[in-house]
Image (tube, rainbow, N blue to C red; front, side, top):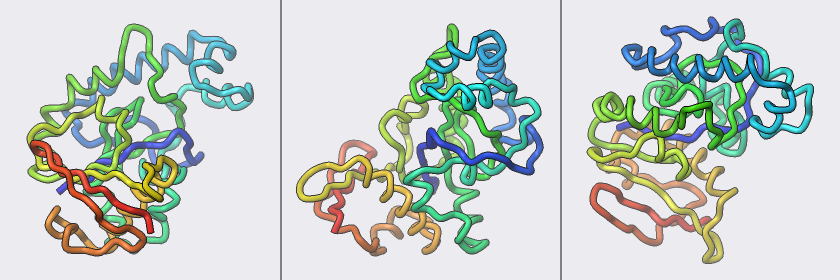
Length: 245
């Protein structure tokens, strides 16, 4: 069983890992495809003005734009699961987990980077900026990664998936073969968005701490703060409607 997770716009700085290279990523046989996107991104950084990148990044502070204009070629890296921050990642609390729990996340979680595509939680990435939905010149990255990585991902994920992604990232990889468990969170009868990010992270933490290895295992577990009120099934996807207590 694998777990799919969205990335975050905000990231932690620093790192001690080697800069961008083939060995930093899983699915090494597809590194040349990642590199096509990376090369296009580097060219964009090099050829765009600060003002142009401010709009492309979605950033107003020009000193921050300047930091992200720098090439990634020599920037240090860290695990993707530690690079990203924000509501979901605060709820995961990766650095507080035991070694076994961290290993569970490292091996079983796939993230979907706008720049690097599908990556394992343990893949090493630099601090970068790529606004969700932004287009590289002559390249729609979502379509590119969908076309080039789907077959390898189908083989990698196996028969079961817990999908904790936001909807946008289905454009990178749509699961057609595996059985999928996904979630909708409601409070006071309304679908929530901010709290959904938190509970996706909390669910991943729950999976890691309880070493959940199948959908059946998860269905037999109890998630504090959430109550299952409905199950909707369509083809290979089972949607759990969870009420925030």
